[in-house]
Image (cartoon, rainbow, N blue to C red; front, top):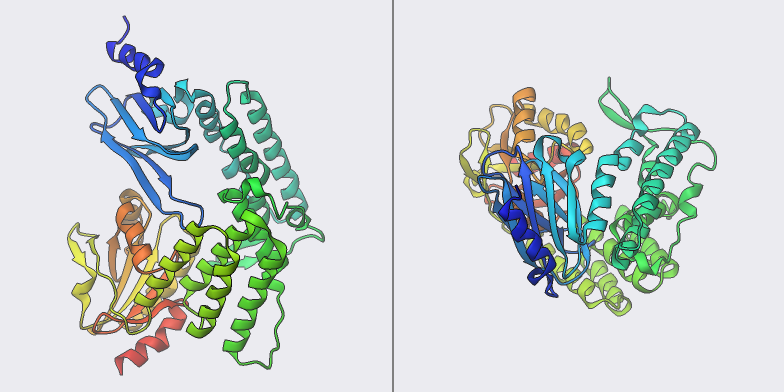
Length: 472
């Protein structure tokens, strides 16, 4: 017998849900946890990467949910049900219904309705797990063999796309997937050079064969249709960092601050001379964002650079991002009061950052999935041991953009020192904005009054002398 709820969903798919400027999404989930949370999220742009929740609800007792969401443009999104996650692509007017078995999520996910072609492909792509398969660079010591392996994974990825690229696929989705497919394996190939010594618990740089990085030089550096695509932007970042930024030479006789300014100006000008149009706007904005967030640029020099940026960038939304970041940068300058946050500790109790006033506070922002964080944590823990027994120093380890299950599992296994705090996804986004950082690990040092000593400490080693100075 047909489920009347499914009949209702089918009617909606065919009729009233197709209004422009919104999408309708419903689902039936078997074997899901009781009252599982359902969320639709997307990123605001590929400069800030702030996650936005478009809709959220709970599955009902039969595992059903339905959303009607305002939606202004064709763009990627994410669907999360409890601990399961998949990719979406939604266009205004889409009316989607899906069925899935929570216990076999990726292999049973199936869509019907308007927009189903794109999302059934994405479900198959997630199941194929091509990005993860290509990211096994740690297992290879021979760069040529690794490149052949990635080539084979890329062929499988492209074959899957050809199998799903049918007439019903929207042009907007094809336009989105073209740079995704073209550039998705640039980063795995780039990452081959990263090795990890398990005995020493540290990363090192592998030797690569001659000509290994030729694939970076072959990237279209002015792919205007992909200007704001995150995968393309990452590919350009790998090109810049490998073939230009890391090779920039300056006069060694210059003071350190002048060397830093020369590096920034040289790489800024290289971007101005290399990129055009929308790609130039995106790349200059990303570069400026990085310089502002690092907080290592003298204010007068930064002001001159921003002045040039404002006359060069033609995207007013990007200029507004830089203006906001500059305002926040002033708020996290040394001597300014640090923002407060109420987070949960390992005992489940709420702890405010402001409750550590009266102590010099070292904060390590990290996540369990972040390999550089995990490698750097022992150095922060060693710094904690140096001040063991001191009541005037506090070490906070704030887990961001993670899950409470992974965080608690790490705490049970490692039994780390210090004050361990967890930030929800919403809190994590707010903290990253308030403290003006994007990537992790990120380190902050506050004085006894809760003011910034350094909003961007360059690791635990650099924090030691700063703590000593603050305690005098």
